[in-house]
Every structure is written in structure tokens, then in C-alpha cells.
Length: 305
Image 1: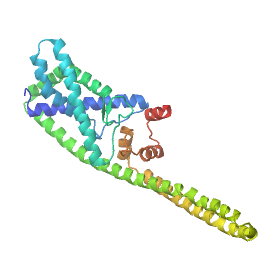
Image 2 (image 1 turned 120 degrees about the vertical axis):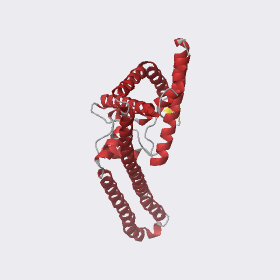
Image 3 (image 1 turned 180 degrees about the vertical axis):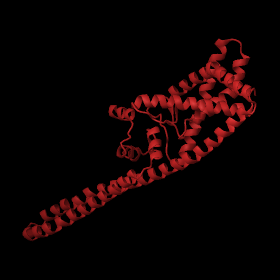
Image 4 (image 1 turned 120 degrees about the horizontal axis):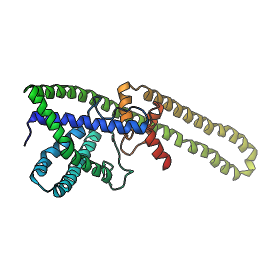
């Protein structure tokens, strides 16, 4: 391998920062406001760093070993798209297992695989990999060489310092993500209970219809039955009122839970507008609506459906 461990660590942070910069610029442009895009609170997207470091390890020999550019470029494009897509798929799966929520979803794109990766994004990864290998990496190599020229120990010190900062950020972000996942689970349970209470309302009103059918069969006791009907009709009305009151109490409990959201949780919800529990969308979207941080781009997509 042409690089030392220190070199690879520095490249990891450089490309993680580049990834954060691209993601933040794109999302901020779409939302018309600054969006700190990324799982971490700091300016790093590790998925970019991991993906590009793997690409450097496996594909730099291709760049340096194949003289014909028209042969090397397609190979790097295809292999880069494949390697980055593997990293993205595994990251999506791992985050879902750890935090009980899907953080991005490509299900609305054609040619997607379980909503975790899709052809369009994989092709974009291939283009980025080619650009990084041929255009960006020579500049980063020169920058790292400049650091060594200033002080032989400086790159190692920088790599160690950034690793320590990243470790603290990861610990904090993991804690926030677990809290969000747990709260989404609670919100989904409350939403299910509210739906259950509301779904029971028609069954209470059906008692009146069944009672009226019974009264028609007993014409000889019509007057007495009407009095009974008047008494019995109040029972389903009371039952419906109890169910509505219970549903309203559950709604208030859910709203309080939504509003009890700390600043860093809001940042993460804003950074991942597609985040939701697998198979359940309403609780996550309702949470964003309650906090007034619903994604403008997602709102436009849903309006078009």
C-alpha cells in the first residue's frame, strides 16, 4: 500500500469533510436555509471517508498500473460505484439495526435495492470516485507532503487529534440517535393506540342500528321499545364520548413527547428528512411538523404523489 496509516487517516478526514461540504451545500440549497447535513455534529460524513479510502486502497493501483486512460477510467468508475454502494448499503443496514430507524430511503427511485441504494446514486458515486482519484487525490497528496515538510510529526499529531474529536462526536451522536429511535418507537405506539380508539367508534354506533332492527321485529311493544331505545341510545353515545376523550388524551401525550425535543435532536431530524422507522412514516413526519422542521423538498415530493 503506497500510504502509511497516518496518511490514510488524514485522507479519511479530508474526504469526510468534502462529503459533508457537498451534502450540506446541496441540502441547504434545496431547503433555502443552512442544514448541517450528516450523522455527526461536526463537519464530517464518515461514509464518504470510508468509501473513498477503500477506493484509494483498491483502485490507485489501477490508476498507476494502466497507462491507457480510456481503459482505466471505466474500470475505476465501475469499481468505485460498486465499492461505495457496498459501503452505503452496509451503513444503512447497520444504522437501522443500531437505532431502529431507516435514515435514508431510495424507494422512490427506480432500480433501488431495498431502498438502501439505487442506480442513480451508485452512478454518482462512480463519478465522484473517478474525480477524486484523478483530480482531487493529487492535491491531497501534495497537502500531506507539505505537512510532512513542515514537521515530520505534524501529520501524526493532526490525525490523532482529529480521531479523538471524532470519537467524542461519535459517542454523542450515537446517544442522540438512540434517543431519537426510542422516541420514534414511543410515538408509533401512541399513534397505534389513537387509531385503535378511533377505529372502535363505528362499532359503538352500530349498537343503535342493531337496536333499531330489533325494535322493528317487536311492533306490539313499540312504545315500550321506544322508551328502551331512548335509554339504550345513550349507552353508545357515552361509549363514543369515552373513546374520543381517550384518543384526545393520547394525542396530547404524543404532542408533549414531540415537543420535548432537544436542539441536537432537531438538528439530526432536519439533517435526515427521510428518517423513519421501517414501514411506518406518519410518526416521524408528524414529529417534524410539530417542530416546524419538515423538509421542503420532501413536502413537494409528497404533494406530487
